[in-house]
Image (cartoon, rainbow, N blue to C red):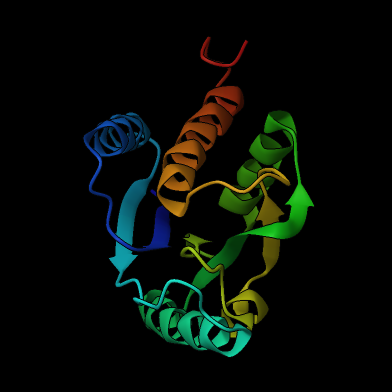
Length: 160
């Protein structure tokens, strides 16, 4: 069974998000050895400067990079990445599961995005929308799309 990692910045405190994340993680367990890893989110002043933001990204990036397995094929979720349909994402996932390393990692940044170092380590950058979503909500959205992709691969009724 392939190992699939979801690495993200910050912890989720909202019950509706933790419930949804737990539900999709449970649905995905038969298909992957799924591990969700959280790293600490940097705190900052209300109106950070551009330099402050780069420092936040760098610190969070170091934490993420320290947790990414060496053998993993890495995708980052980034607004500037490639946008895919659900069918295209399922095809990408299927190819990754078939041909890539034994571990696949998806990385979700914090409030200020991902450091350049994390983006450079990735094999691909994916965007789920040009809209901005809270990073906590993005984790739930991503897990739902991951489950949808698996449903498409296995021809289940979930994706209609």
